[in-house]
Image (tube, rainbow, N blue to C red; front, side):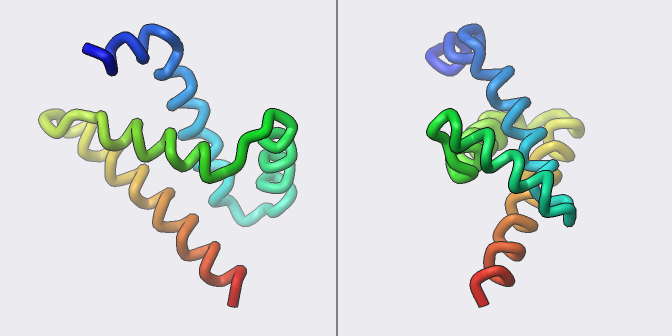
Length: 91
């Protein structure tokens, strides 16, 4: 019930925007990511905040519909891609 109240209060919009940001950040074009990071910083947010919202969204998707399962797999791909890019950056 608490989760439903959060959705009614705008959480779904926030989750969808975070999902879109996640997709944009895995593109190879660095200026897009830099722009996103700059805009997040203006609002005192970081990419890890967006990642936390994406993970929360993924964890609250159902397991019964094929569309939910496919969406979970896509989210996992986004998160994995972010991990791989981070490892390459720090080497």
